[in-house]
Image (cartoon, rainbow, N blue to C red; front, side, top):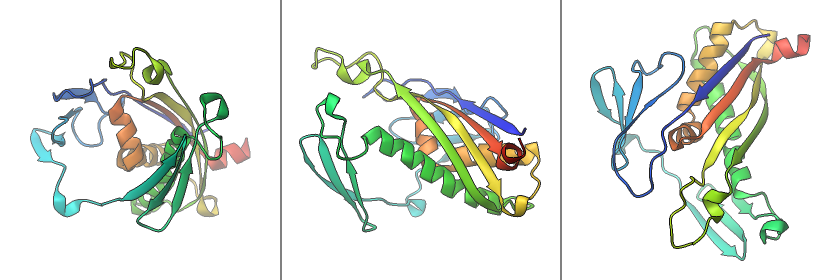
Length: 221
């Protein structure tokens, strides 16, 4: 069975402090042509070889906008693309459990972003890989002390972010086309590097342990 496992780890950065962090991009050789990416909290740069390129080029920015109104634990948000999103927390956390939790929205965003990015990456590969569908099975955890630690006047010593996201991405290709292990590796690696949500989660320090599988192998098994 073809299965590609991509694991990335980024260094933890203290809130409110601006300094450079060097971190491995991937266990495999970096697709950017450099082993490390330099992050600066006040400005965003990517190092390619020995050349430093400023990433935040205003001409290439894609903008998003959202408004929201919250009452108690529930919030209703409207996007500038005319969609409505709602978030709440479970009753045991003091909420009304009337909508998905914010972190569930984050994982849904990861799934949606991965789907759209993978379709694009597959189309751009040579030969083209036309994706028929993708089956996602994703789970995550965080340390609740990052959000709940007291006293409230002191910053938590444990990060509130997700610590690990794991699971599988099973890709089914149109007309059952044969896909090599190397093609699947490139599809997974390039998708995780180009998906804005995955990229942001990588940079936060969250471990991304995602197994990319060929759906045809699963069906045959």
